Image 1 (cartoon, rainbow, N blue to C red):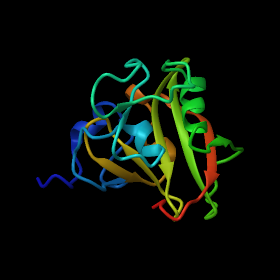
Image 2 (image 1 turned 180 degrees about the vertical axis):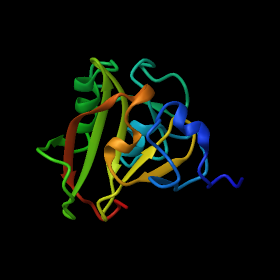
Image 3 (image 1 turned 180 degrees about the horizontal axis):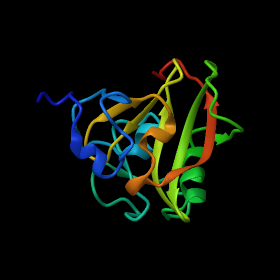
Amino acid sequence: MTSREFDPSWCSFAPRLSPATCEAHSDPTEDYNCLAFAANDQGRWWEPYVVPPTIPGVYWPTAVEPDNTVSAWSAALATVGFAPCADDSCDPALVKVALFAIGETATHAARQLLDGRWVSKLGDEADVIHTRASDVGGGGYGEPVCLLARPRLPVDP
């Protein structure tokens, strides 16, 4: 298996993934996590519980209460221009993010691509492209509970 092939171990935390619903988009990396990736920040790991960040490469917005709640993750993404939106329809003028949770605990963030598909960073594993945001739901990620959007920038994929 090359590092960009479907890895069945991904199904342990995202059981809806399959070779039919997703494709690897990157090699595995510990440089960034799903929340950073949703914010298009592939140089830092966004982590609320290392405040102030004392580990190189770890980041959390200073104005945001450090917590793994949907409201804290939404507030963190608001620092880079995201605001609540009504639906996950594809709008080429917007970048949309789906936040996932189990109960009140935020667990995952996925970003919508220009073609309407979604991309997720799976922990320190690969980035994967999937058809619907909910394709990474179930298991350890829970379900999508919040949608955010911001205007698409020239640097956005």
